[in-house]
Length: 194
Image (tube, rainbow, N blue to C red; front, top):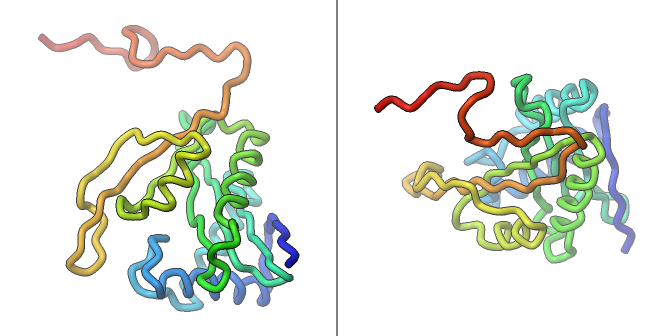
């Protein structure tokens, strides 16, 4: 079995179909990747084109996993668009097609995305995961991601409600960066109201 990673910045019809196959297959089995119902080809194509525009603009990177030449998994990191958050990015769409589960593709994707984000100067990676996705949470924790907050029962899938678990990973900072945290003073500071 041959497993390769590719980092596309444009898509032809073959790539659009391959990504659609993965997204549709994952959602069809209940995967928590942004759709409740399996998306149509037009939806996945629009998502991929918008994502690849962000890649070309330097605001995202998308990695696809090929198993014996067939796209079987993917993931991406994407910067927050606000100028004060240019050194942070969110991981998303980490998935493997149901036919390729158990091959360690999720670990390969997350490893590649962490390394790539660090090389791009990202200081903090965040992600959101459905509270009942215990396997994914364990995977992220194995990389050092930590939970920073949880919104209980806000993800809706029909009549079901699930927790939205927020996690983060520090990737390091450039020399000279000053960590001010929540200390008083600095831009935007205001005193407590008593």
